[in-house]
Image 1 (tube, rainbow, N blue to C red):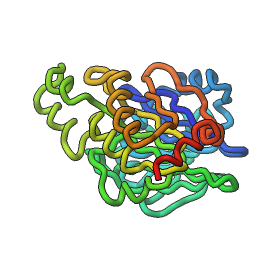
Image 2 (tube, rainbow, N blue to C red; image 1 turned 135 degrees about the horizontal axis):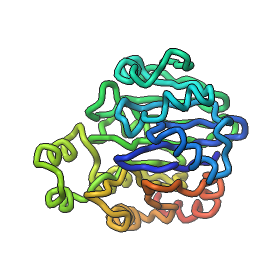
Image 3 (cartoon, helix red, strand yellow; image 1 turned 120 degrees about the vertical axis):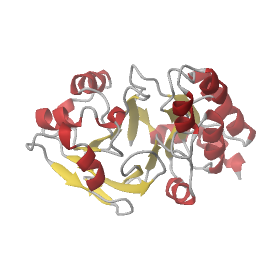
Length: 273
């Protein structure tokens, strides 16, 4: 199973998951042209996508869904409340399918498990994606607010995690946002800080965890080196020696092969127990 982020941040988010026969996007927050360009950088033909799974209605996760669905005929999966908010993106010619949080559904060889999150959207979810055959499971939670018991349970045992590390607390307080926006970002319905992401990642550690990709970093209130230093410092103290990187906004990450990451880093993870 392979995974990459086409980009992540306040100006757009999209994750590509590639199996033997199935390819899906989780979120499509860039223009269709931008997503096609970034997929081609990874060697993936836009026409080869089997589905787009939308996690919530914010524009940095939905911007390209309508144009992409019309241009390439890719089915779009989203919840009914999210569909209602995003109605203006569709023209009636798209293939739109509904799902519900807590009810897994299949797309080819993938099983998608959506679960409720805490975020200021109409019906926000995060997902884990399980690939039949190899048994690999990827968790994607880029707009989290706060980690609840249900979110912890849903993300436990993943082989690879894409986890929000949105802001540095000091940079947020001294940054360009009005106080009201700062309060929203820091609230339990907003975004995880670097320290909150580090604490959550520490809770999710287990010997089979092959990698963590930090996502949705704020361009104004965070820096990749800050996020990696905070999260990496906490994880290293717990014995984590696996893959750790931060996704950027403007270019895709490399296409990571999760099984190869486990082979590369796996033996060191035994120290966790």
